[in-house]
Length: 387
Image 1 (cartoon, one colour):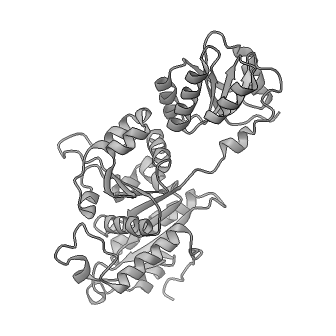
Image 2 (cartoon, one colour; image 1 turned 135 degrees about the horizontal axis):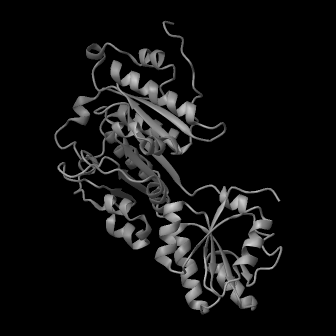
Image 3 (spheres, rainbow, N blue to C red; image 1 turned 45 degrees about the horizontal axis):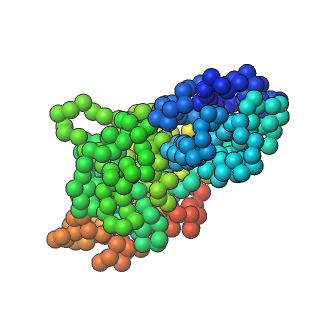
């Protein structure tokens, strides 16, 4: 059997025949097994810390109701595939355990070939539920947060439930974009990801409206800067997508200098790069796109969307959309028009920008079409410099 690059977390009691279990997994090419006590919080903590995808759960000593509750809780909190090991041979027990969320139920000691019907590789590579959209500006002040907030509103109008996370823990302003009061809940969620439960989503999220939930973690400027660990951020993404159709991450441009920050952009299903018609913004956008291209695997299914946000009039900037395309070497997918009277009107802050300006409305509709896959993004087109 070919060795598989999969690790399994084994939650076991002394009654479990560990040798028989390890032999059964070895038959499937899985040799990396880590043991932990049968404690729900400790299991979740280990899953988050080491990114396990499969849990072998010992339920030998547990009554049916207790085993059912534990399997269901672990499935909801971790999203892992669970192989339950017990001693009850009744078919009703098997069906109840599988219905609770276990992928397979086998008897202790685990016999040779007992795991042959479990396709671990398919489970390991199973597509994640939902869609992650990362929005980042090529530099600060290009309007990325405004675009992220209104993209969430546009997608919500189309029937999606949206989670939005402001990843700028110092100077973020998505609370102003949605006209709500921010809090520090996001920092606590990322510091203690093993505690994420459905009730935490309800209590920590700021309800902008029904179907749009905002997460913020605004800290005082005199405290130490905070940035989450990769595993904690991955677990948070999975947690949000279990409660919503799409997760929008508003990434600060400075976070791309950090490996974890860049991975938040690179690993998203849709990467929205906002650029304004200035030399510094265009140069940084080119570096971001080049880095994404070099890190992207063939057939990864990731989508890059370049948004040109005209924060100045054509006369003031002297740089046109065609100039941006020629300098970047990539086509611009969405053009946000220069509309100061629309975005800066009295009472505009915190309100939707989708109404009141036909060109702005059309631009956000086009962005939502591209982000949701209703319209295919044009393949990267390399423009000849000086053409």
